[in-house]
Amino acid sequence: MQRRAFIHRMLLPLVVAVPGCGFRLRGSSSAISLSSVLPEVVIDGVDIEIGFGRRLADALTRAGVKLATEADDDLPVLEIGEFDESRRVLSVDRDVRAREYALISKVRFRLLSEPGAAPGDWHVVETRRDLVVDPFQVLGSEQEEKRMRREMEEDLVQRIVLVLRQKK
Image 1 (cartoon, rainbow, N blue to C red):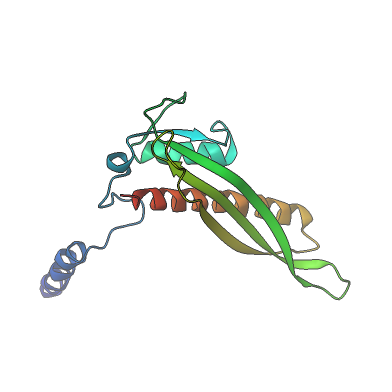
Image 2: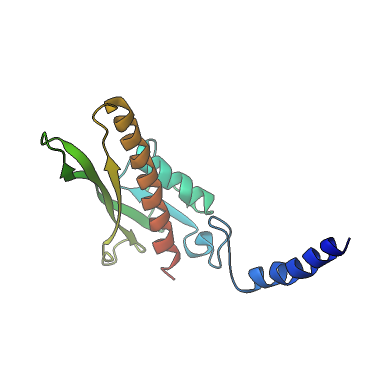
């Protein structure tokens, strides 16, 4: 019984202090809602039905942004520029076969807030992961690279949402 009371006395201040310090779990609601900054948007330059475009559309929808299907003179446009995925050799084995790669993904984007206004600056977000290739597990290495690419796309999408949140 005393042990239980001791644990309660130790945990109570911690439970009260953690939310008070501003700590929030990743993905929980943030101070600035994206829907208050950007209630509706048109996405241009990427197909929102597949791949990166689908992930971006889903993230914006989860953040409360309504996606317009057609361009309207009153709606802001999220213009996606080039989306680039590259792979660079970091190390080779004694048979001069690549053993380690740097996977790099980056995307350029800008928000055109008012039609006819001067376009804003391009923002570039980039992510990088290292991939070690096992020459005896070629299929497994390919699957690992695909999984890492999906994670990198999700990371890029989250970074775009963060930049858009900081716009206003």
